[in-house]
Length: 310
Image (cartoon, rainbow, N blue to C red; front, side, top):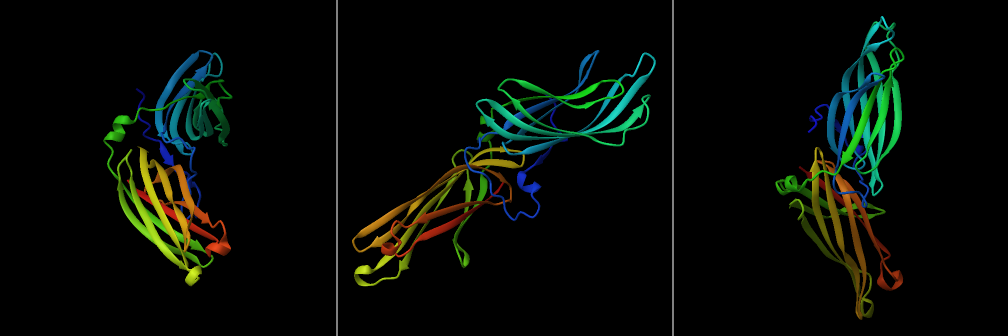
């Protein structure tokens, strides 16, 4: 088992967007389980390969992590000169996609030579590289982040991934606090329709309902009203670090109540979302009338704001 990645900093996408008031996570088909990344930092040279460090982390698709390490390369520039280089390595690894063909990973690396003995002047510039890697199931990928111009030694990352077994961890997970705010959106602005506070159990979830009747213009034979009925369900799936994956399901209908019956229009939404504790996720919903002149309304728009605390 590799050592824990103590220097790994999780970077939610929303935190990389300065000034964003809320996070709008992309819905399905995001995988609901994280990926286990394993990264070996290698010294590669003509005399063989040696592992300098072993790290691991769990990341969801769309999330990134920063590997920060100091490593030392020892080699020879020639038969008489021994060279020691001390390097500062920072590598951002971002999981872009996960599918049947494997994992797509974006790697951005920066290497600075911190100290150099026996090999001439200290380089001033950082060595930066950016790679898009595709790693198949059960495979690994080598990515060189630095090559010494003095000794020819390389600092290389060997990257592997797998889907972890999280069944036991999820069984022992604590309930998640969920706040669901439902807004009606119009040209005049937003109006709060419902505010639900829930405790959602991992794998089971929690649900809330909304029901209202809105009178519409008309009297006698043209008397009519609009009934809005929604059920909102939030199902926590997996928690890894500061990120929670959860399913969100919305079902219901907007109906026009007429003297001769009613016309119903379904409202349906289903998706997997990534949450950061305390940061809301917004989902837009809407329903349109089939015959605005007969029904007395044209379109109803909602914004569902879900905030989780874990």
